[in-house]
Image (tube, rainbow, N blue to C red):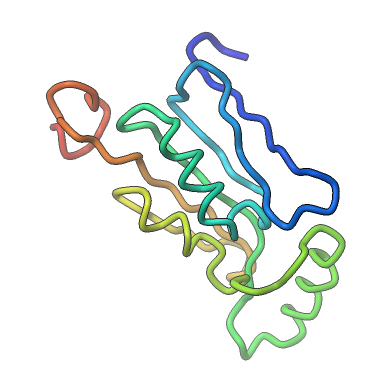
Length: 138
Protein backbone atom coordinates (compact mmCIF):
# COMPACT_ATOMS: atom_id res chain seq x y z
CA UNK A 1 0.00 0.00 0.00
CA UNK A 2 1.40 3.46 -0.87
CA UNK A 3 2.83 5.56 1.95
CA UNK A 4 0.29 7.85 3.58
CA UNK A 5 -2.72 5.82 2.47
CA UNK A 6 -5.05 4.40 5.08
CA UNK A 7 -6.64 1.02 5.16
CA UNK A 8 -9.87 0.05 6.85
CA UNK A 9 -11.26 -3.12 8.28
CA UNK A 10 -14.91 -4.03 7.85
CA UNK A 11 -16.12 -5.59 11.08
CA UNK A 12 -19.21 -7.76 11.27
CA UNK A 13 -20.17 -9.98 14.15
CA UNK A 14 -21.78 -13.30 13.20
CA UNK A 15 -25.53 -12.74 12.94
CA UNK A 16 -25.15 -8.97 13.34
CA UNK A 17 -27.33 -6.64 11.32
CA UNK A 18 -24.89 -3.72 11.44
CA UNK A 19 -21.40 -3.47 10.06
CA UNK A 20 -18.76 -1.09 11.30
CA UNK A 21 -15.81 0.34 9.44
CA UNK A 22 -12.77 0.62 11.68
CA UNK A 23 -10.00 2.76 10.16
CA UNK A 24 -6.39 1.91 10.72
CA UNK A 25 -4.18 4.63 12.23
CA UNK A 26 -3.20 6.74 9.21
CA UNK A 27 -5.78 8.95 7.51
CA UNK A 28 -6.57 8.35 3.87
CA UNK A 29 -6.24 10.78 1.02
CA UNK A 30 -8.64 8.56 -0.96
CA UNK A 31 -11.31 6.26 0.35
CA UNK A 32 -13.25 3.91 -1.93
CA UNK A 33 -16.50 2.18 -1.05
CA UNK A 34 -17.95 -0.61 -3.12
CA UNK A 35 -20.09 -2.71 -0.77
CA UNK A 36 -23.79 -1.93 -1.13
CA UNK A 37 -24.51 -3.09 2.43
CA UNK A 38 -21.96 -0.65 3.88
CA UNK A 39 -23.45 2.18 1.84
CA UNK A 40 -26.82 1.47 3.46
CA UNK A 41 -25.47 1.92 7.00
CA UNK A 42 -25.43 5.63 7.94
CA UNK A 43 -23.48 4.86 11.13
CA UNK A 44 -20.74 2.96 9.29
CA UNK A 45 -20.46 5.73 6.70
CA UNK A 46 -20.32 8.48 9.33
CA UNK A 47 -17.61 6.53 11.19
CA UNK A 48 -15.58 6.10 8.00
CA UNK A 49 -15.92 9.71 6.83
CA UNK A 50 -15.10 11.09 10.29
CA UNK A 51 -11.87 9.06 10.34
CA UNK A 52 -10.54 10.73 7.18
CA UNK A 53 -8.49 13.90 6.95
CA UNK A 54 -10.28 17.10 5.88
CA UNK A 55 -10.51 17.29 2.10
CA UNK A 56 -9.88 13.57 1.55
CA UNK A 57 -11.34 12.25 -1.68
CA UNK A 58 -14.10 9.66 -1.41
CA UNK A 59 -15.34 7.45 -4.24
CA UNK A 60 -18.17 4.95 -4.19
CA UNK A 61 -19.22 2.77 -7.06
CA UNK A 62 -21.29 -0.22 -7.97
CA UNK A 63 -24.60 -1.32 -9.36
CA UNK A 64 -27.94 0.47 -9.26
CA UNK A 65 -31.31 0.26 -10.92
CA UNK A 66 -31.48 1.55 -14.47
CA UNK A 67 -34.48 3.60 -15.63
CA UNK A 68 -37.79 1.87 -14.76
CA UNK A 69 -38.66 1.42 -18.43
CA UNK A 70 -35.60 -0.83 -18.85
CA UNK A 71 -37.36 -3.78 -17.21
CA UNK A 72 -35.22 -6.45 -18.89
CA UNK A 73 -31.98 -4.75 -17.92
CA UNK A 74 -33.17 -4.32 -14.32
CA UNK A 75 -34.04 -8.03 -14.18
CA UNK A 76 -30.46 -8.85 -15.22
CA UNK A 77 -29.09 -6.36 -12.67
CA UNK A 78 -31.15 -8.03 -9.95
CA UNK A 79 -29.92 -11.51 -10.90
CA UNK A 80 -26.30 -10.31 -11.04
CA UNK A 81 -26.34 -8.51 -7.66
CA UNK A 82 -28.71 -10.76 -5.65
CA UNK A 83 -25.95 -13.07 -4.33
CA UNK A 84 -24.03 -10.08 -2.96
CA UNK A 85 -26.73 -7.76 -1.58
CA UNK A 86 -28.77 -8.27 1.60
CA UNK A 87 -31.54 -5.94 0.47
CA UNK A 88 -32.33 -3.95 -2.65
CA UNK A 89 -33.75 -1.13 -0.52
CA UNK A 90 -32.13 2.07 -1.76
CA UNK A 91 -30.67 0.37 -4.84
CA UNK A 92 -31.97 3.16 -7.07
CA UNK A 93 -29.65 5.65 -5.34
CA UNK A 94 -27.11 3.68 -3.27
CA UNK A 95 -25.05 6.77 -2.37
CA UNK A 96 -27.99 8.52 -0.64
CA UNK A 97 -26.57 8.09 2.90
CA UNK A 98 -23.04 9.11 1.85
CA UNK A 99 -24.07 12.22 -0.09
CA UNK A 100 -24.89 14.45 2.93
CA UNK A 101 -21.54 13.59 4.56
CA UNK A 102 -19.32 14.84 1.74
CA UNK A 103 -18.95 17.99 -0.38
CA UNK A 104 -18.73 18.52 -4.14
CA UNK A 105 -20.66 15.33 -4.88
CA UNK A 106 -20.60 14.17 -8.48
CA UNK A 107 -22.35 11.05 -9.73
CA UNK A 108 -21.63 9.50 -13.11
CA UNK A 109 -23.93 6.77 -14.38
CA UNK A 110 -22.43 3.91 -16.38
CA UNK A 111 -23.73 0.96 -18.37
CA UNK A 112 -27.13 2.32 -19.46
CA UNK A 113 -27.72 3.61 -15.93
CA UNK A 114 -27.21 0.32 -14.08
CA UNK A 115 -23.86 1.36 -12.63
CA UNK A 116 -22.47 4.50 -11.01
CA UNK A 117 -19.39 6.19 -9.62
CA UNK A 118 -19.88 8.87 -6.98
CA UNK A 119 -17.01 11.14 -5.97
CA UNK A 120 -16.70 13.88 -3.38
CA UNK A 121 -14.49 15.20 -0.61
CA UNK A 122 -14.72 15.25 3.15
CA UNK A 123 -15.68 18.66 4.56
CA UNK A 124 -12.94 21.11 5.47
CA UNK A 125 -13.30 23.14 8.62
CA UNK A 126 -10.63 25.57 7.48
CA UNK A 127 -9.43 25.92 3.88
CA UNK A 128 -6.16 27.37 5.09
CA UNK A 129 -5.20 24.52 7.40
CA UNK A 130 -6.05 21.27 5.72
CA UNK A 131 -7.51 21.29 2.25
CA UNK A 132 -5.03 22.43 -0.38
CA UNK A 133 -6.48 19.92 -2.88
CA UNK A 134 -10.08 21.06 -2.38
CA UNK A 135 -11.51 22.91 -5.43
CA UNK A 136 -12.89 25.70 -3.21
CA UNK A 137 -9.36 26.45 -1.97
CA UNK A 138 -8.27 27.69 -5.43
